[in-house]
Image 1: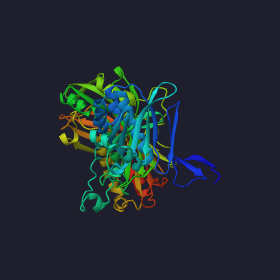
Image 2 (image 1 turned 135 degrees about the horizontal axis):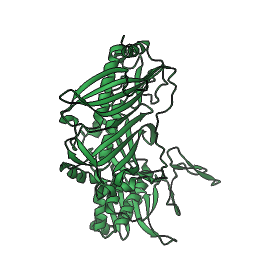
Image 3 (image 1 turned 180 degrees about the vertical axis):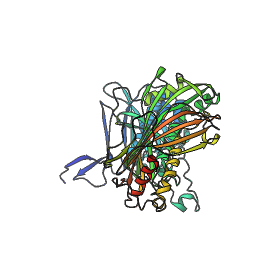
Image 4 (image 1 turned 60 degrees about the vertical axis):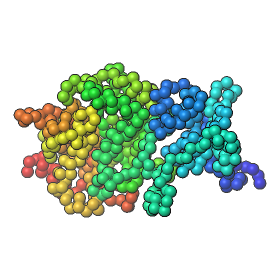
Length: 528
């Protein structure tokens, strides 16, 4: 044996050893900027080195996620400092994540002996990670974490330690009997379970949430996920991402005095998603702006997850402001509560250090020659379709106003109503004859609307191309005397696509619009 070997990196970022070594050898690497750590062995490796940094309780709970707060409290109750306990849990999760390739890592307390603590994690708690503090040559204490061989870990736990602090069982997996869900349906709780964790992207924290695509989400004619679903997911991630402080937020909003309003939001769709795909949304807060930094700008990257492979699907963005509710439908921006600020500050990318590239414009695709565009006048004269929607409490939320996601649902309904007249055959063919696909839409809110208000939604032509259509939407509150108040405006970009292979992630290149659709648009705007 020559003992010649090298370390290479897979596309997922995992290091692998290649060369003249046994094929069972695995390796893991970690660094904290000035110190490096590595481990190797004939079982799945995972190691992590983390300097102990000072954070507030709120910041640690935001970083670790609500599921690990009981472990944090248990470590502190056992005499551990807040910062050492938080760093220990973070390092343990990172080591298990490297060993298993799972982004969603559960942790359960194992054994404790002096400053060493083990945890169990991974599928059914099968992975053991050893954590301990170390004072290195620069005199800065760090936490080291190593995934161990399970047999060695069990042998290393003394009977005395077991008696003093028995290991906790991992969370139940509902696989305890012959009629369990897992045995009947091969349900994978790690792939389908919705979870919140924090990952490092471009050196900054970000909240990621994974969940399966449901039947209702895949509402495009061809069976892929519709644009309104991405908007609704965006709202769900925004709310679930505030889990550690959600109770405080709800308590403030329940007073009727405080709330949070959406200023604008948008969706970019770059690829297809289908029912039963696993989608992961990762949230970055790019900046806090406005008076007293009351306005939050966040972005979400959507990825399809298949094992360790992540495929980019699209982006969403949202700007929200903390407000005081002055009267029915009237609000004013106010400084966000200190607990809210302390929670999101660690997840905010500093100005000038925005390493996460987020889009500001939809991708440039060839949509062919321009056929017709609307004149540059205050009111677009090229009206294609309109509809009045009567709202109820079902359209609202805990703040009391109409939920922002309804604006996307109304877009979809008005657009489909227009298409049904000239493209009924194509819509009935479930995409086999092609479909009009939204690749970008953005809604700008001007004022609030409340339950039991009537909302008029108009759809007008912005530009007609050979292979796509740009649409403009306007939203109005309809008063009892028939007058209108403009609530919001939206832009909506589409392309005509032909079907690809079943389950194909890539959206097919734009094809020519059906002549019947072009004729329908021109007839509507020319009044023929």
